[in-house]
Amino acid sequence: MNTMKRLIRISLALALLAGATPLATFAAPPPPPPPPPSDADADAGPPLPDWEHLSAQQRELLIAPMRQRWNDSPQQRRRMFEHAQRWQSMTPEQRERARKGARRYEDMSPQQREEARVLFERMRALPPEQRKALRDRWEAMTPQQRDAWIKANASPETRTAPGSR
Image 1 (cartoon, one colour):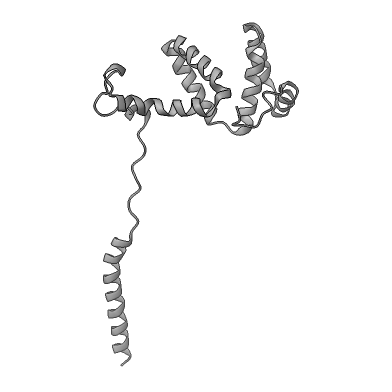
Image 2: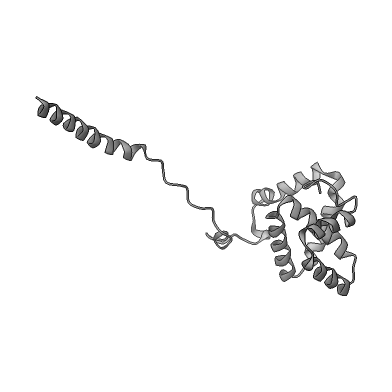
């Protein structure tokens, strides 16, 4: 009788395992979505026409976000317009450096952004040889010395909250 109970238990266990395998297959989570396209894949697909050959709908799709920003921020219009003029005067190499700098800034912590803002504001007012001297001094400073320098050199404009500029 004892052997019979063991056989029944083993049979039930095997039956459960056999039935659980197909169920586990259906219950498995779906595979993760494919990664987003990289910059190299951004232009994959058929080439798009130049501006003159875009439809009115395609042009509107591209312009609408800028129109919204312009209408939502009257106090920022002059800055946006001057930025657009400056962008137009840049060489392709200067534009690429600006894009890389913007990506690097986006990846910074709030503290690093604050340091970058203050340092940039101070350096932009200096002639090239003094900029180099400040950059060399900055690289030689300890984190505590940098914090003290930032506090001593932050103007009211650069003391704004991150993301408010």
